Image (cartoon, rainbow, N blue to C red):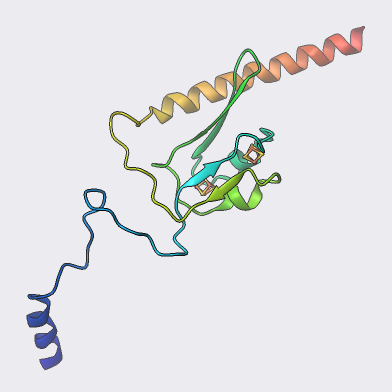
Length: 138
Ligand code: SF4
Ligand code: SF4
């Protein structure tokens, strides 16, 4: 009881244990599992990272001109590192830095991205199906 009382009194004179991040810089500890970094040059768009991501924080878009985009949602990511462990080409790394806070300038409508990515994948599969049918009949 006395110990608790003393701790409470001492805490009145101590600095707060919390940090005012993002208003004040905060240096994460060495093993902190932070933002995911994608290396475009190593990525083959195999989609494994998208498949293993538990909350669906990675989306790969296959555009109608066959170009591809890799998208990551820092607000949905649980920073588990599964995508990094499962990338067969070493195209992903996890830094010990925080993701920048999201505001109007960098926040994306993720639901819209998910819908669009699924729509584009259906179109892509259809294109592949037609290509393979054309090959068979030629
Ligand atoms: S698992 Fe790696 S290579 Fe495959 S799409 Fe993801 S980042 Fe690219
Ligand atoms: S760290 Fe986990 S939650 Fe975040 S993108 Fe990778 S697999 Fe998904």
